[in-house]
Length: 190
Image (cartoon, rainbow, N blue to C red):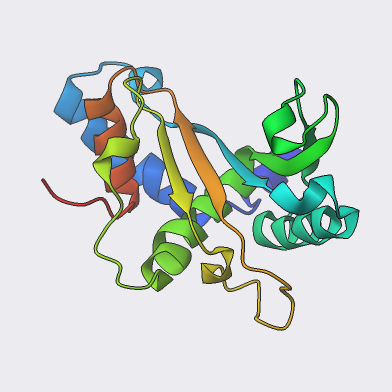
């Protein structure tokens, strides 16, 4: 009975596509013999810096609420590691928020990011390939968090930028590019 329930459990659309189409194609392309050798997304980290949080704690609270609407879970507040006098930042002071997504939430967020949010960027022609770090992980900065359909102009007091990092098990940038393009990430063609 439990085996049937687990087989009928909800699977995110992008994860099903990865298992049925993307992983076999990557195995053929790179000559892997084991499915665990094929690169796969490990986690997605979404972070938002809030520079005015040093003076106004309500700005940080609104940023946390907006990020929670975007990612579907409560983000943690990040604090300064050391004091920087030029920025009026003291060690331990709250300066932003971040959320780490794994499992089904990661797949759902990636699906919304690739297919809904990123195409809503003004004058969008593709994301830059320069965001890869040499180990197959991809980081992109987004200037306006209103591209996500979960937020409306009425909910937001100030537009903010955020950083999205997709961590993969790929060992090289070529493997990471092949994985993310197969999943639907719109990268600029060379």
